[in-house]
Amino acid sequence: MKKPKKYRRRLKRFFAAVVLIALLWVFNNFTLKVSKTEVKDELINDEITLVQLTDLHGMSFGKANSAIKRKIKKISPDIIVVTGDMFTYPGGDEGEETAFELISSLAKKYKVFYVNGEHDDNEDFFKRLENAGVTVLNYKDEVLKIKNTEIHLYGIDNVYYSPTFDLKNAFKKDDKNFSVLLAHIPNFKKFASFGIDLSLCGDTHGGMFRLPVIGAVISQGGFFPDLRGEYTKGLYELNGSKMFISSGLGDSPFPIRFFNRPEIAVIKLMPNK
Image (tube, rainbow, N blue to C red; front, top):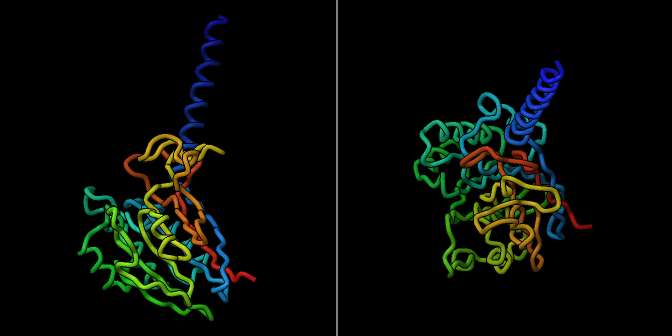
């Protein structure tokens, strides 16, 4: 009689562990987090709210991504920036339509700027976005006046960087206004050498699987990239230039996020007083 009770206890513990793991998996991969980051600078005269979306990879958070839209409505940003890989190629048309519906619907209410990643590098997609009122900043720049502050927004569409990559070949640095660069793939040393004040990037997915203190467990460059000084997630500073990497929204190729939930990134530009 003792053995069945012992087995039942073990079975209960086993199923409890399975349920806990399943709940943690769902929580870490399919529930949205709003992160908030402040950047202060003398060229900023007002509090300005940017929302960054990146690396959706065709996923949906609620019907027609209603959960993302609700959170953005609550944030009420001045502008929205999208930094690529909003759908996965190859992967069918469904993910592309999901990404287009989200971005185009946001463009009806907000000023939206977009650069592509390696997956959504598609001229037809760019044209559809532009027709929907989205500004595609593929090697283009634009000066925005938000309240009493002028922001010089740059965008690049690199899906890789050659050894000769240099922003000076495409742009002239504006020293009068606060500069923001949209780039899917981080290349901080090159961005900083140009003098960009703030770069907004994606691509890394935050390392997907993270541990406290250690950070990302693995990246394309090997294990424990944060401990080796790589840039995987969050705000970094180099020679007066800053770069923020969002961990993004989607999963590719598998949903294995841990301590790294899907992220809507809010960047607050603040006066440095």
